[in-house]
Image 1 (cartoon, protein in one colour):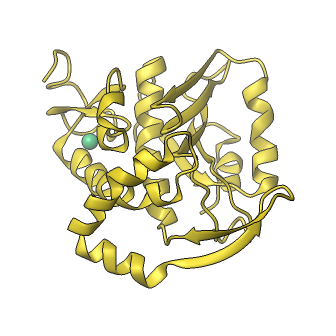
Image 2 (tube, helix red, strand yellow; image 1 turned 180 degrees about the vertical axis):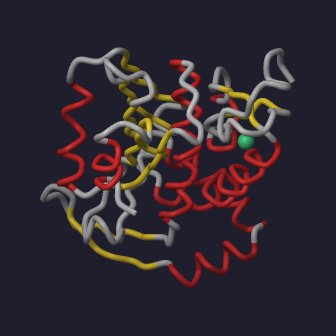
Length: 241
Ligand SMILES: [Zn+2]
């Protein structure tokens, strides 16, 4: 373990002491030759375990919806994982559906959809928002802050997108692994703990969300804000729950 990760507060809960360095975006999302220079933060064993379980499930399922440049490579990585994981395999077999659709008026294509638990993706992105805010801007998000991540309807996206183009204290745009995990973040000028994120994993489109009826999106939006701040509740309500 590298220096500076042991004994400091866990970036995810700020309550327990860290015992390990956690990759904010897990190495196993990436092919072996694209795992360098991924951001790391200090994490406690409990947070690390919860996050690992989510990563384990999602790295076996999400590649089946991959749309990024190396989608075939991602799929090849996922197949053996899925075979090893019987419960996921059974869920997948039960939930696979085929549909036919035309993208932007192009030829009709058969498309496979797989059952992905939105709650798992949103929970993992809750960790990732905290990790990235700390990694880029040393923002510590604890019990005094609200953090939420979710897929958004078109109306929700329109509310948040202007902030990424506007004035900010800091902005970041990154793409790890040629589209495996791409994100943009923006930090509010007058409040360092107010951060806004859009993230996509494998460019995979996820649909069927109750808040985004019939619409699919590859973007997960995330936000952090101080609980004491007046507009926080309103912002969090756009992200649902
Ligand atoms: Zn923790």
